[in-house]
Length: 457
Image (cartoon, rainbow, N blue to C red; front, side):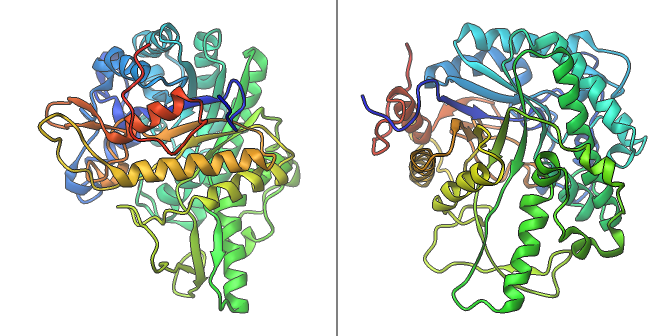
């Protein structure tokens, strides 16, 4: 069987703690900023909360068995900081940490490689009371938390990531207020962004002190393209958008400097960070995790803040339920850009997926989601093309294993390969899950497959 994908390539799915676990205060856990945010009227579609979510906290073994049936060789999950340290610092909650120890052990028994993310947006509320990502002490708080988790799990977890999508944390949580903690300030967004990078660097340093495997950073990248009749203003706006979303975090973390466009974007809100402090953000990492969903074709729009760009909807393109264009060629482009710009570091696609309308289950339990199957086929093909052109891609994680709480969208958007009935919590693999199982079984040797029966060996 011939395959573009190298031996040892990991085939996985990804989730995050608050989106699937439920029971956010169980066994002594402390509340997170999302536990508060969902209780703020008007913040989340339908007033949905993560109090139950997918019930993964109680159904973890069932979910790992489902992963095994699909043939997954990797599972990317996040650890809820407040389960491990209810106050965010100091006291360790053995029961909360024990849940992740049991999860890791269950994954290993199933032959699945654990990929652990330390922070996926659910800051302990007790730390938010101390300023959260605006407090410079948070880098030390994060390092202490990270060290605790490393010491408990590094003997069994070979792949770690520090922060998931720092751009989303700062932009959604501090710039536009659409995500927890719900602030809206360019001054705060600039500070939060910097402290997220400081926490990442501190988390990597903590890993080098006790860890024996690999640690990286996960970023979301969205290529910014121009239409056929772009003006000079459009070109400049595109550069600003690219710097703000795609280079603001990777350049400091891997090159030791911020993009020069940051001052123009933030204006007086951009702090004059000391040069030595910015240079200290650059720490060696073992890989980059890429979360890719879409591209954006942009034009200049002076009414948009803080980056003067507007997206241009493309005629004839397929769009997801979240209004993201399906554009697999941009995944190839992004992987090659990361490979070339950042020194050929190993890459993992840590999230890739789409929300589409899913029909109710048929009498035989089948749920057909042909657009998601098409999305998977074309995007896995795009990864294969990047590998063929020289990118060192070592794994692919579909987002997401389960339908879940899609943050401020609540339960209104379904990304899962497995359907979840949010009333009964019954799991039903969709056609996309069966398709992905077939790709995994053939190690990506053929992507033009009908949906297959899940692997059970």
